[in-house]
Length: 400
Image 1 (cartoon, rainbow, N blue to C red):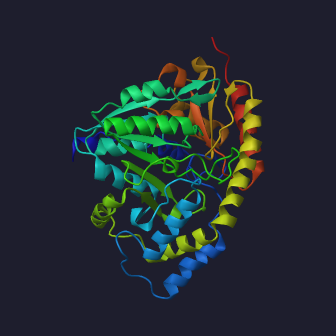
Image 2: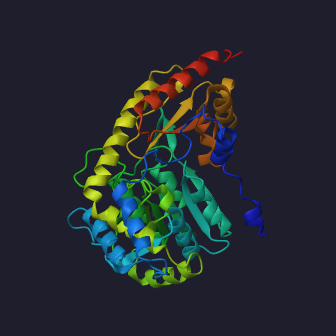
Image 3: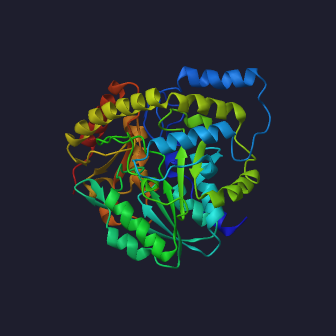
């Protein structure tokens, strides 16, 4: 096997989940998905497609009508004056992770320099490494539980030798979100260096700050249609469709045919019945997504104050996403977050994701973080989970 593949580390989140699989007593908040099933009308659209015998290959880039629908949906989230996104800039992919990997395959050669802003979902660090790139991580900085960007540090890291900058905002795991001014500075800088931007904006709609269009700031609000920009999206989060594995990429129109070729050699195409489900989802986006976001805001507003009232826990209110990223303050008591997460499963029946999974060589100030996915139908489960955490913390011996 290639050394880059041999060097891949097993998912730390999976390690924790594996420790709790088959245990009905564990409250599971480790994976980034809601425990609510996909709405019935979306499932029925897929079932109807199967009943009609739509079991054949589709176009590499996706059903034309779905690409048109995605283009309209994407353009509808843009502010007045932003460039409209046409269907010729859309590629339908087999999940958001597939969209991201396709973008990296399209842009990165072995030996290229890639900069990734962390903490971040670990796939975004692994994907360029798989392609043989040299990956430099620039970290957000925690200040009183709130993660902040040192813009000057990031721009310094993105030199003319940098082929690709990978950003995720709203961010998994921190909930941090780029401001419009930061996006403008990053886009302008990358234009001057010739660096591509890969923006993972799958949490764009899961944004809790006041906004006229119901979405977080996007690079698509600012970029020209020929800018070196690819934006990845997914039906997973805002349409409750994690298991359907469907996403899309927005890119310059000149790149789209080449993405189609790349899709052919990866998955050939997304299943037609899944694309029919996506068409139904987009048609009802004005009803489905605000309901999802409203419930997630209730979940956030339930969980975060409870964590803030817990002795020894430091957490800030996230602006977006579906996660509480919090810190156990006394590192001499708890140390490595992977070990702590495994202990919580066994000793408290509480399943959380370890903060180490989202960082590379984390600094001491970034140790001890845990991620809690608060996308729960039952708010009582969140309260019960906090009680288990509080009880576990109280049982730990004091620092020597």
